[in-house]
Length: 228
Image (cartoon, rainbow, N blue to C red; front, side, top):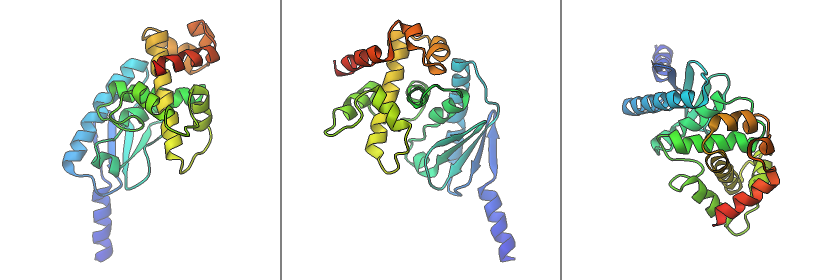
């Protein structure tokens, strides 16, 4: 009888909730009904905006609420969000949904930078890596910290391409720089043309074709911009 009762509790805790294209599964057993409703609505609204922005669709997405860990995406259509981010209202679901919709990146700098950019532009909650700072403000803050080992997009790409377990500050700096870099490229160099960014930079690294400048020249200009 005890085993049967335990099985029923587990099944109820992990039962999915679906509305539209987002299927939520509470694997933590701690998601409150009001949190579920807010998370469902947030993810649905963000997903619709992102599908329009990228002219892409990953189909029905399963959002698994985990007891621990970090936000992650698992192609073709699953994301994990730890319950502690939901409790703190820092669940960056738009960031992970962006990864599902924009497979085929040319570099980690562009992959993570685009997700930070869209979270800031479309996401309904503030979170990693800039929280209450603007994207450019976060990059400016972190690169100016004493001993910062990431001070530009090239170093950010290196940091994001290498496992950095436990190096939270370095990773936060790299994510912030990547987000600022992508925002600056799209909004300043490409006048907001996301389609051109996706076609000529995100998937191919053809910076010069898209902007008329090499990566190194753009990196110098970005640094001048971010420090001004």
